[in-house]
Length: 205
Length: 205
Image: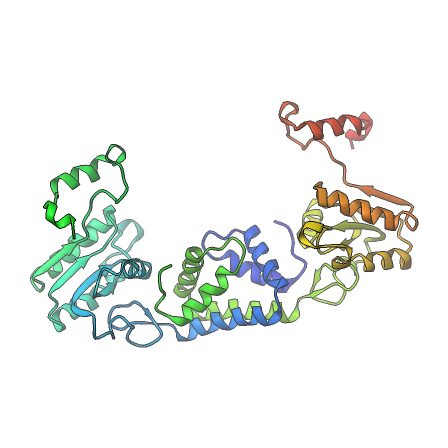
């Protein structure tokens, strides 16, 4: 790697390069781009980082990111707290919210059971989920996890833990994506979508 | 775009997204990755940015980045100050230094003449170059500019300004890259490399 003749820039490059999918060449380009901006703009960036480190909290209830102890979703009286959607991470909450189709609340596991990576239930926010279900008389748990081996394992594990406390446990519908063509759909998806076929009336909703 | 439920994170995402080739999805991923680190690590990043904004200077002599008023290259008595290599930007200095083949000094233009982008000689560090040539009795100017239309224009312009003051004005050798195969070399490069062919003895150096 080329040597950078300024220790100050080298430091910033090192920090950028520690981020995912940012290599050293890209990190250098980002640092030099910042240098072209005014000192005030770089300071603003630094202050934004410090404010994030100091003030961003995780909701005590659902573990979503929040500026307060309880996040805006859990705090919203208009949302159905008896309906908990279980997701892997914060990005999944954002993806679900972007659909504007869900009016319940969330529970962020903070990962997924993956013995290969040494992640078991104890590393995830499972205990707080069980506690919530006990305390809040939850009516429905919706699993919104990826359909990977780890996702299925996690669903299986949680289902066993929850099935005696919660009457209704559901999972996201799997099927053919909108716009997908039948001939290019993989066999598992197509097979499952015929097994789980829906009444035609449902489709018009 | 998905809404982010924390103003603090939104701020950091906005700053990341203002960097070149960082989209909003990537910016969010970078911010959330940072959040997983300790507060101390994020603070370190912020401090590195602030230190860069406050302390990085541009060398008064050659306009390269520097932690001091004069950069380490200009300050190095072991380098030949009578040989000035003219480059477009700071990255080019690093690329040249990485070759370890040049023992002179540099002059960073800070861009290239490009009428389409409204960049003329007045926007570049041309006046200081002419001044250096007058004051330092420069023996050789080496143009190390990209072989684009703008690069050729800039060379042409500088050559006219410098030819009466400097005895020797050279430009980087253009030719077939090491490892390139003749049949895949473009016609202009191959044509020039036959016109500018070198004595075989030179090659063994």
